[in-house]
Image (cartoon, rainbow, N blue to C red; front, top):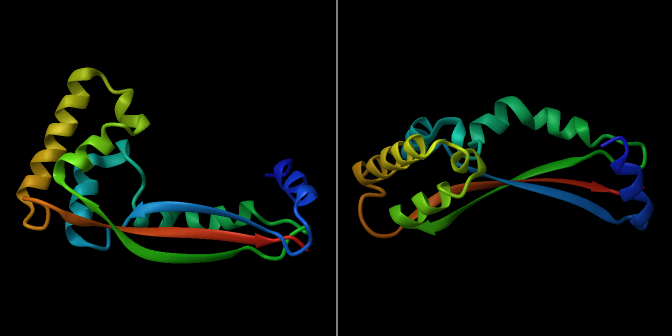
Length: 140
């Protein structure tokens, strides 16, 4: 960021904003927390990870005298899913793609079995709880 922020500030007008966002599964919801236990570190990090491990480090990375102090906000929402669509999405995550075929197939089978075992996700459509975290900085 030491090299990027001055260049970003150069192209932004004073008062212009730089923002980044991260979507995380909301593992404050019990069935989502269980889902994270099944998938482990092979998929995107859940909200609890960002809250405990990365939130302050992320804001610190954006500190610069060229910008006002970084602001952080969270927005809860949901994404319509089915078990099949969620398994298909997880199968595209880079950490899953690079697994050996047998390990990937086992992981996705375990993931699908978990979804089929939860009343919230066992049949038809459900809403995957997501939190979008936004970090915004305004050019001085």
